[in-house]
Each structure stands twice: as structure tokens, then as C-alpha cells.
Length: 328
Image (spheres, one colour):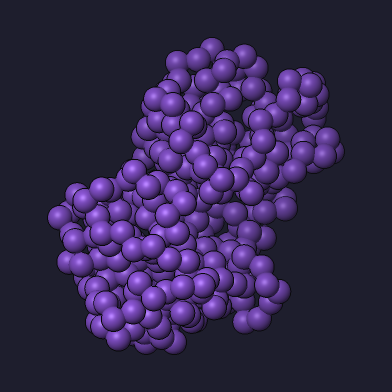
């Protein structure tokens, strides 16, 4: 197949491009040329900025387009229209933020999405979905992704934990270790999106692991094992962390307090699994992230994802939080 990836040089897009080449597809990457110029030398490269210049796409034809970089509705509308003249199947990466009820409530693939809303990430993703469908009716697979993890993660949420645990010593661990999580390895998501493209499957799917696939304790424990460190996980109750002003999700990545975000890790994926989505064990993802970091993976990070990248926690802040371990 002739496959066009809009993006394809950082994190998820990079894994999509890698999987497409491994399957023997004829790969074209449309990028701004800012990141990953050395990657995929066998692929055709088209330079452009989807916000300003899509001329490189016009008059061309692909069997499938996988859009890993669509955030602005106008950009997605223009990109989808530029490739609509052929017979391309369009796979668009959206987000569970498309559901206004999430993460306060559990959602599934039939839950209401934003009908309107501010120009923010979640509502804009829904507007992007609609723009793609309007340009290519019946030829769009919308993948509402959950927490994506794996090597080359520029947002650095799971790597944040692996790096800190590798350093050893007492580690402030958030909430209840039995708190269930669901994540998806970027490689599994990429492979499945290619499956959807190859089979020309249309529809809306939640792209994340099954609810209950792992726990916070198991995930961080896997990082201890993968790094071989002497780290000791010191679990701190949600209420003590909140009282200390800890910001969920950002200051301690992946921490979603149960009383505030009860639906964070309860995203329904029935339709996605029926369409063939399969996820490797979370411990395997952790081990591969640990190996990536050991091999100097952090040095490859660029500005992509830096706006959401959690900062390292200072020793002083850690000591303050570790003082809360016995708080009941």
C-alpha cells in the first residue's frame, strides 16, 4: 500500500512509520522538516506546514493517510480535503478528551462528545474529527487515544517515573498502589491503526488498554525491576497529596486522584477490541522504556511535547512529600 503519514518523526508517528516500513508499505512522510530528519531515509519526504502550505499533497494519491499530528480543525479540514480526491482511507488520532465527562466519569465509545466548547484540546479534537469526516465521508477511522507510552515518548510521563526510580532511594508514590490503570504502548496503537488502514475500517474507537490491565503499584514495581534499582516506593494517600498542593497528572505523572477523577482509567474499548486492538503487558512497555533511557533516549528529545513534559521533582519537594507517608 501507499501510505502517507502526516507527521511520522516523533513518538506515535515514528512508530507508525516504522511499522509501515516493516510491513513493506510504500511510505511517504509529510513534515515540516524540523524533527527526525535522519529517520527513515528510504521513505519519500514531502515538506510543508499543514497550517500554511499543503501544495506538496495536492494532485497526489495514497491508499491510506494516517494523521498523527492534527490538533487544529482548520488544519485537519485542509489536509483531509487535499487528499480527498483519491481513494485514501483516513485514520485520525483523536483523544479521550473528546468526551466532556472524562475523567470525572467512565466513558465508552458511544458516550457524548463535545458539541461545542472553547478552543481547547478536547473540543478541538472533536472538531477535527468532524472536519475529517466531512471531507472523506465513510472513509475515516477516528482513534480516541488514551495514555500512550513507550520508547521515544517526548511527553515523558512514564519515562519520568522510570528515570526517577532508576536513581534509587525512597520515592514518593501517589495514592493507592491497587489503583487500576490503563495505558497503551505506542507500538501497539501504531500497528492497530495500520490494520484499520489496510482493512479500510471506518468508525470511532477508543484506543487504549483494557480497564484494569495494570495497577499503579504494578507499573511502578515493574520500573523497579526493569532498572534494577534499590528504589523504595513510599505510598502517600490521595488526600495527603492534595493537602500538600500536589498537582494531579503533572507534578506526579499518571496520578489521578480517585475522588476527583474516578473515570480516568475506566475508558470503554469494546469496539476497538472487536476491531482487533491488542495490547502488550504494561510491564513489557516499562522494560522497553527503561532500555531506551539506558541507551540515551532522553538525549533525542526535542521541543516536541515539551509544553506538557513534567519537570523533575526537587530533592526538597520529595523530602516534603515523603514526610506525608504516615499521614492517615
